Image (cartoon, rainbow over all chains, first blue to last red; front, side, top):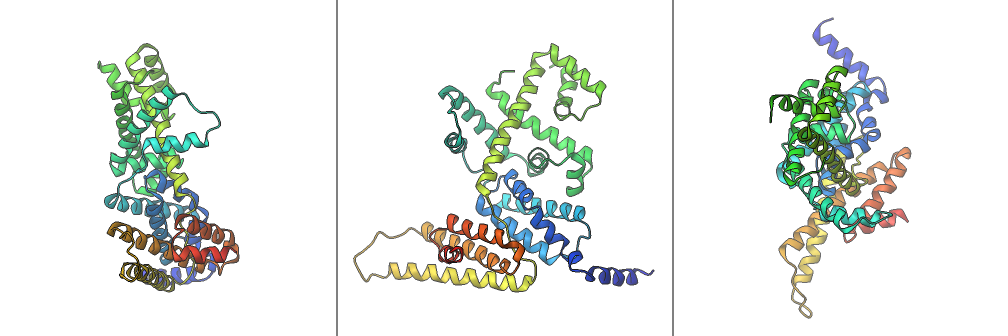
Length: 190
Length: 170
């Protein structure tokens, strides 16, 4: 079959059923919680996450014929969401809520309040980690958020970002060591 | 840092993630049992990941239920979106012009930042409302629609779109 005929057959096949046309958007709806996790893991605030996910949803509608399978759609959505989040990083501060604010909210929701010393240490450590995450290179933050907050393995991250699994592992090692060393500068008990 | 510590440090993340072979894993475990420095690094790796998890979870809580659009008619969606934003900005700008016109007793003047924030919020709320209205055509999206209306009311309470969303909920 010539290249042109294959294209025509492909178009006809895709136009055949409603479900095949909208697999991308249906996957978007189904995977919305995970996409929100990606935006949170990348440090976007509510307004920026809202903008980013609206953009992803519109892009998913415009390119709804792009993916034929759910797996392909998940990979596409992950990649596009990550890219949108990285675009927001260039314009706005990420992880903008301070450690004190995070702890205040956690304390309000906690059943048993922690001691003052424990809270002070936790606040200091949390601020170091928050600050480091906000300064971390986007490529390192992306792989860390996808691996440790969204629960993807190295192969899945590699497929979504167009990297090998070993390149993903290398980024994870680099990102994790940066975080750990910043914490060790403050002094951590083993 | 001696050479064996240097080698082990390179393996610590993979060790913690369970990515090493059994033989490499027991080599790291053996080293950790003898080396306080590497134990400290290992503890810091663990602790920093726990704290990162707290920061991420807090962000997720803030993000809540954002991110909906509709399935068909991107062009229509875009026009509605722009029209809603424009209308909303006009309403807010009109209100501010009215407030700034010296007709009654003088009120405290808003700062440019306040005006900008209010216009920005109105635009965002209007855009969300437009997207949500389009979703109402889909029977299986009704719970998401309600969730979106509640989100608009809660997040942008002072905007015209929040008032409309409140009406839709009722």
